[in-house]
Picture (cartoon, rainbow, N blue to C red):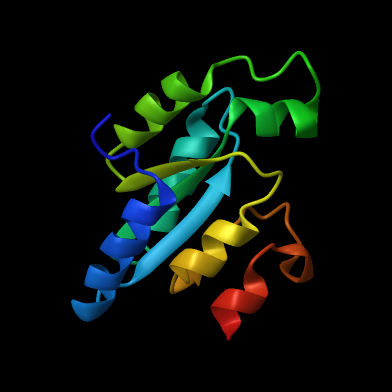
Length: 130
């Protein structure tokens, strides 16, 4: 898949983007059953910067969070679909329950979460604000 990369590859790309003064936006989620709300959210996220990186929960991560019957759509299919959306520049898959380590490595300029998240509960907020 063209823009589905490991975190180490993305860290190198991030360094280059920083040198080019590109504003990097990061968001994450399961995106298990993709719907219009997801696409709208990703389009609005992209509008906040130049490059949108999406952290995608792996199948094992989703099972830990949502139970054994999830995900409905396997990670490779979710990654393929998401990486082919116009708004999404890069996708990286993570196995942890949250994306904190990815955020620490990438240090995006902007961190986006849905309106259902309280600001004080957003994982990685401390990294981005510092």
